Image (cartoon, rainbow, N blue to C red; front, top):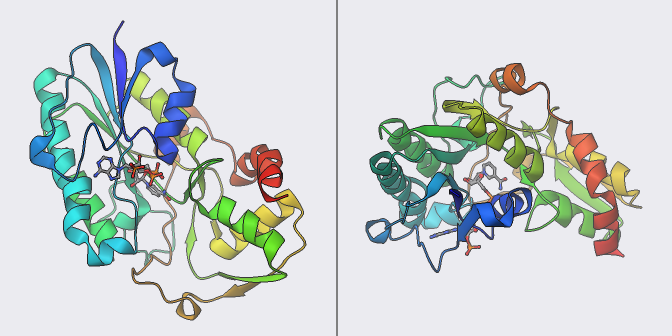
Length: 280
Ligand SMILES: NC(=O)c1ccc[n+]([C@@H]2O[C@H](COP(=O)([O-])OP(=O)(O)OC[C@H]3O[C@@H](n4cnc5c(N)ncnc54)[C@H](OP(=O)(O)O)[C@@H]3O)[C@@H](O)[C@H]2O)c1
């Protein structure tokens, strides 16, 4: 039986795929086995592999500002190597990218073919990864997503839920707008596209759009936390990496094929019991 090769098995998305796919249909590796920061050393054994799911990335957005070289090797150079090995072996490659490849100055959802122009180092390296993949000749599916959260790992939803029970008041930025994405919806819909034979670039997120402040209000509504949440500007919380002000991804191509996904409010409700168990 041919199997899926998951690269980045311990991240939010790699963990989701290990939950969704039958264990005997999966080979999963982490950084100890395949280190993407050393692209020249990557040698994937693609014998009997049905598709490669590249869930690994250098995702530390702020750290990338002072370590762009490592981020580029992981997010771009390694992608080119993986794509070349997939091309040679005739194995499809599912790869993931980010809303941060866009500048964030738009006022309507970004179409798939909108010009890229990343603001910061992380986005630049992910953008280069996209470009190298597009030029690789591999049989690829590239899925852009945004604001990923999960019942595991480090993410905005789990951090906010914890803080909302620790602090009486929180300030959350209200001048960055995007689409939250529950990792299970991302994993399921991307796999459906792959298995349906779709190739090229797609956008996959939850339905709905919001600012981080509005997302925090939705999290508070979900868990019923006794916390006052105030909107603030990004200028009040300076970070090393610039963030796009507006990075809502246009979902129409994916929706036409798969129908609408769940809203972020519905996905949040599926996490309610787990979040409350964590914070109490
Ligand atoms: N998180 C978001 O909000 C977000 C938004 C838009 C797009 N995306 C994209 O979605 C995809 C999945 O993200 P995620 O949230 O699941 O990321 P994540 O939770 O940060 O996981 C990243 C994974 O990459 C692995 N990794 C990092 N450096 C590596 C290296 N040098 N060699 C091999 N593996 C390495 C990590 O391994 P260790 O655990 O060993 O470090 C981890 O398993 C990525 O392509 C990301 O760029 C994420």
